[in-house]
Image (tube, rainbow, N blue to C red):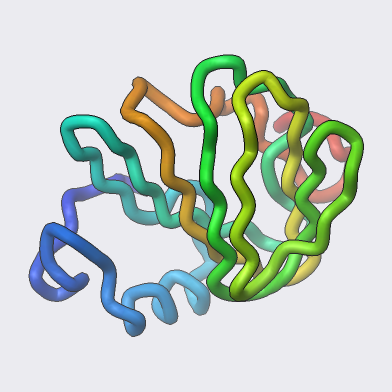
Length: 133
């Protein structure tokens, strides 16, 4: 998967059209499906297959805003399990322990102050073992 700048087809430099979100929701790919970086802000469109997601970790660098668009999953913040799906909006404070696991095809947006990456590849979770893949 290559992350590319948005085009007019996707809604222009400032956003993603709803049909682009639908295409991501229907696709088989997962992880960051679209990304844009401003001078001070990173925004990612992320998708996970059922039983996949982001393993439990502590992000000590930045607060992260998560906005659910399609599908369902469970967000865990500091050992509190929270249902996550369309219309969910959660601010995950830096230094909190968090994880996210899809129960159905899950599509959401992350937004955080600019930095090199939101998570390390080893923090992605596979479907069977729950261990990093």
